Length: 480
Image 1 (cartoon, rainbow, N blue to C red):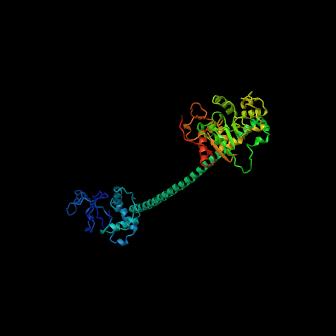
Image 2: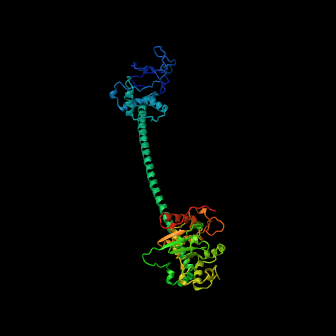
Image 3: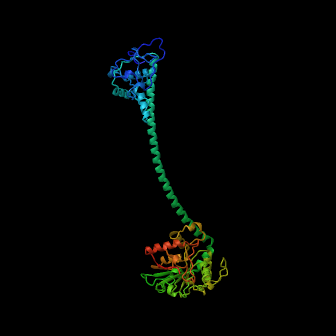
């Protein structure tokens, strides 16, 4: 059914309506056609004049021709509603060979996405641009079931367009939601970084508090011994290392370690030229005067290192601690036993309790030193050096035994009291080229233990030397 003026009456025996596929081709697509052909069904496929109708497959060009929905003759007066009505008629009669079906098939073949139905005005414009044929007027008045179907068709178009608008709106809202989530994620990431920064600062603060609590706990548990020992250090000479001759005098100090780098160094005279010389542990002098000098102003030790040095290095020549006139003996408080040993040494008696019970300090020193010769590093200074300069990873794993080495504590003590400091016999980058000690009769490699971080100390001395905070003795050499 095409238009009321262009339809041809069907006979009573015609029961099957004309059928057309979306891309079917008929003769009335020709520009010369002015009237619609007879659409009555012909079983033999011939027209009323007896001429056989051409099929789509007989198209000599082989190019498919799309069927266009023809406009009415009065094109300018046809309204959108009329156009929709004619589209509905074609839909009802099965003649859905309009431009929308053609464009849909083209979009599918080209891989493009298009909507099945567009806005009626856009469809009308497309027909006006592409259709150069004349069309028969279509009846603008319909009634009965056909009018109801047309109305349903128009409602379907409206609902469809509203749905597409909602889809676009929902998609835009989704994009805005994703953008908002990205912004929130960036803000959340910044907050996480700030939380981690605060967490690191908190852990550092807790670590410092823990160290201070350890000191307080040690004081609390051992307060009777500590208080008793400190009360014995009543001489003015116990509270400071040395007296300056003049206020503006430059005090030069040498701290001598026991590293094998000093063997054959010939630094003895230079070492003795300093105002004060610090030595530690197994400080063997006899037989090595040219390399390490003979002068000793201060001797630093812990009770454990003193007793071990006398035993371990006795055969190497360390049979007694240095006994220079006016020498100062510096106790390093590593354990409670250091306080007990210092108390016994000041009083000239044996140690009364602990792991050193029965030991007479005079046997270790070879005599009974005067009270003003004894000094002790403050425990807070040991914690200060550990936390600020030598906070090794070993502190976490070996907290109960780790502490800076005796040589490191003596060198840091000198740096905090002297004006110029020179370090001899300390670990350097090429420590493997030398023996462990300068007095070793047989070359021995340097062994690292868990209670000290010697490599970290070596990096510290190198850094302080590069910044001219101290002068570190270094030289090339090969192990013999």
